[in-house]
Image (cartoon, rainbow, N blue to C red; front, side):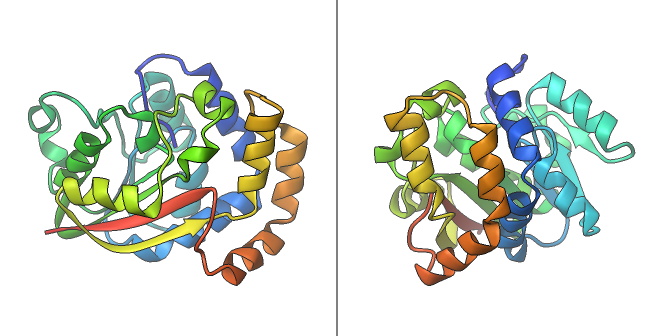
Length: 240
């Protein structure tokens, strides 16, 4: 779950390291998006492999990727024998740069990636080019612009989304949206408090650990609100 410039990313890496310790949360996110992911898959912005491990442990046919060279090297070290590639979703000559990846996948998913990219529609267009006709592009991004605060700025988020704005971006990229939902309702309060009221620039370890222990409760809450509200929004687009 990483994208952006190609160099070292201390802020993003610190956040990923914190999230790597949240086993219940990572499994929850995985189980939420997995029903939309089939066949040969590409994960765009694998970061340090927090979600990659869930897919690989379940025997999925997955290619890992990241733009940043340090993450690519770490993925290669942590997942020996697995295909790991470097992909820039807004490369000006995308087709020439990645000919072997064009229309090579049944599913491309990008989790907490697109918000880091200024030209999000171009990034989504290039995700579409990576899947076969009828293939799925699965996107998870932060929800609600009113939640944009110091944490977002520190993490390099250009924007946050709603169902409507994410659907619009996917449709502009030539994808037919077949599913949308919100995810992780309870964390909206924590994000507003941590990055807004308290103006912190990092995800606090102690609070994150407590959140993870209570994930079974938070999953029930999401079901109770019908996945109509949450810290993240998910959408699935189909390539025509």
